Image (cartoon, rainbow, N blue to C red):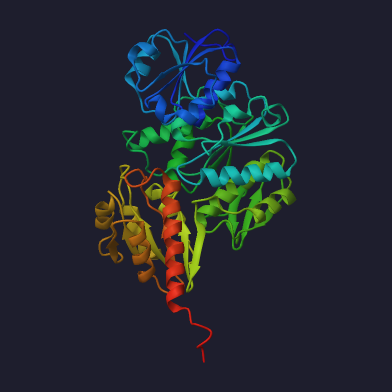
Length: 469
């Protein structure tokens, strides 16, 4: 059975997973007249804040996923963090329409949509692209996997005709899209990740490629030609491709020339933007900036607006964010670097030698690429968490490696290993769930440890002015 878009009145809808996207999907469906039931593996006592956002009359089935609940549903909206469940597959076989919040929301979005995906850099690119388009004066929504669900844009000025929605989309979200159609779709990079969900790299690439699936010949695809996996994913594209590269000059698209980011739209002149920016350090951020510039310019943002937004941009929290500086050693929080590709991208072209703090919960895949980047950029490494032994094996003989029991010890050891002019970088290459609630909690523990180190060291070397001769 195929559910007609927009016609949800009277339909039985089950929303599985009560994260932000699940809450937004439930509210949207209820607002369209559907009979909504929400479901989560957590018990009600663990979901008090989430349930407070829903009407008290909305049906709830919490503390598990009973198979009977999935029977007789017209539509099942699955949150991206929910793993594949046998009752969902069985319901789909019986004819239930299984989808996700991004697809659902897109049915009711009338504005121009920019969709941005990739293993790394999605959030920075989405935020910067949104800032450029917002400087143009049009109503602009910025969200998706970044934080605010797309469903919350429905009915707002940014979601209506004349507005723009800039949406970060994860591979998990793309698994359930059918008609989601960004007028500009961006694919930044694809490096091995989420092997705890995907059986192989090809399956992961297939999920990322779905961002282009509903595009037409009138739409644009912005792709990073430097990445061979992106090139593989782009082979099925039916829209107009515009390339970006940090390794080669291009006739049309975006590229780097010395200290300039260059953009040239089809039929237009070359535009020059500064590449040395305090908020965008490293080669990977040149890729992010080029993608954002090209996407925004394709939708009519002016070069002056793009330049102003680019210069004013500051890094998002936990993405190569400078959190301390002491004795010419800089401390960077890159806790969002939860896979090997993210760490490699963050360190490639970094202007200082790096003492890397890495480790956490293993997500599958090899740590060998860390050895290559640390040969060029690394001073040493300090490892924590469940994956520490595996990472140590990859880095053996490449740089000195120390093991730490917790973040406090890791920061102390890293500071001792660093030399003047170096950087201590928390970029874990792993998820945080072995030791912390999430990557933000891990970052906060790191920040506190850095500030404690700086304060305690300063106290030890402070000279009493009354006896200073």
